[in-house]
Image 1 (cartoon, rainbow, N blue to C red):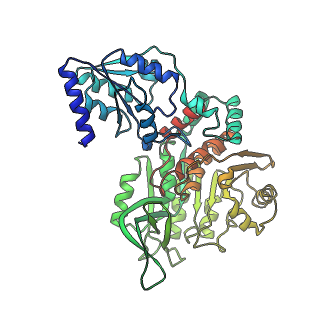
Image 2: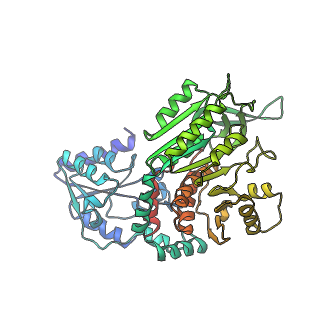
Image 3: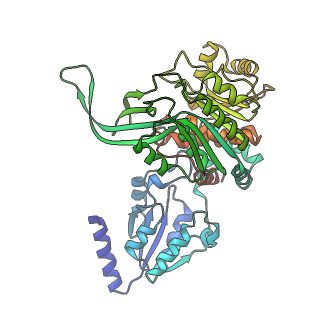
Length: 503
């Protein structure tokens, strides 16, 4: 218990000994408006000592740019509202920790929480039980309500004109409830993922400075974390959206990595992992990171040195088998000598539901291309990769898109353009565009995989192209707000963001 918490409890104890009633309100309170003020007034009427707790920044999942004000700014603002007696920063994603701490006589929520079943998180039910456990009661006010999200979404506080116009045009075709029903249709899909599993190793520390004897930086390492990257990251992104996922990948079967996989994979993710040759070690990409700025200082990769696959025939049989059981195949070819021409031919043979991402990275630049793949449903590629593929750094991106679609005979091409967003061109050369929504970028590693994961589902179900770009761009934006592939996109997170962004 912190010193501040002890002080708060001492105050509460004195008030309760004087038969005064403790009232608790909880929320984000990102943009305080008249509705909040009326709510605090009504809450204070239930008792004598009003405590307001706020959600920490890291637990707020309302979309890009949220919260607008950080937790310290929000606390500072509320401190200046005279009717509030105490401000507390909650240490969980609900108010349960604060309820257990202060044991309020009354826990007060707004009228929109009166119907408990409308709270998808079901936290209000748990909070009600916790309050009643200590002899308290939950109360609901009848005050006028305003939506902070609606105010922020329609202002210039978060979105620029291009982003806001895109959202407003999309809302003319789809409301939140309609999009929610569409996304639920993903559930029946069964997906086969073929591509290299990669372990992303992040070594965090303080930069001591330049070495005294040699021209390099020295890092005082303090923390090492391992994340599932590559095809494993895609499997995690998809696992809460679809019925089942099967992943085929080379893997060194190291016990430590097997423990991570077992812990991170959901039950509906099946795998066929194999050692392509004796002594194979799992592809591992290590980044050394300044923990204060999250800047990457250096990278060290452990990559396979051989190109021969001793189990190639076995892999071909596995692919044939799982293709029959799956609705669609996602190919993530990272160019690390796994998907040979023979394996690529087997993947695309009699299979029209292939969604491809063939990435260029430090180890394959200048050597990797997508010539192994023809007649696939869709390709997702970034602008630099497309320009390198066609050896053209000058032509308009739409001209290059037409060339690739014609050459590879594909149905859809999505080109990601970083902060400029993404475009989708179909085989009739019709173009759709979407602005980028990543307002805070911590780490771009894995953004393409997140976008591929969600976009491929929309493309498979032939959804509206602008809707596909929107939800997959949000997935990418969620990804870059975290270090590496530490967190993955889930149905619950995406659904919550859509609900707030479309208010």
